[in-house]
Length: 84
Image (cartoon, rainbow, N blue to C red; front, side):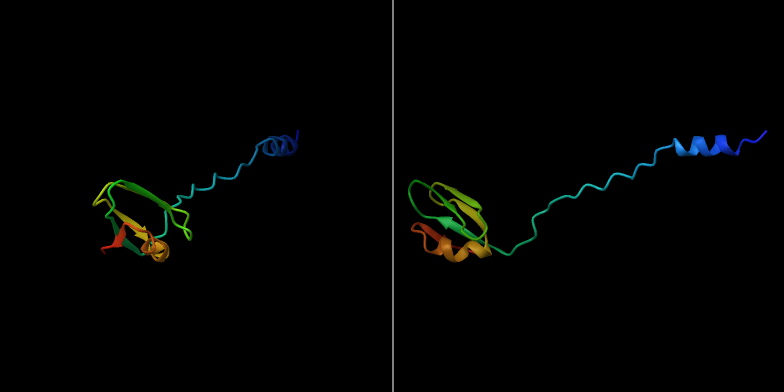
């Protein structure tokens, strides 16, 4: 009596599955930033042309951290000034 064939049969029926790939977390790369302050009376929203980020300033004195790559655009917007 030979059992070699049965052992191979049993092994061939085992399915090998790859370990699931580790989940990648998408952290925003730490980009240099500057602080802008809104000096207008209402509110303002500006979309950065470089990053596509929407910056919403809600009322006088509102301050937001702005990606350095969008700085030149926001400097041209009325009612916004760089403070940091």
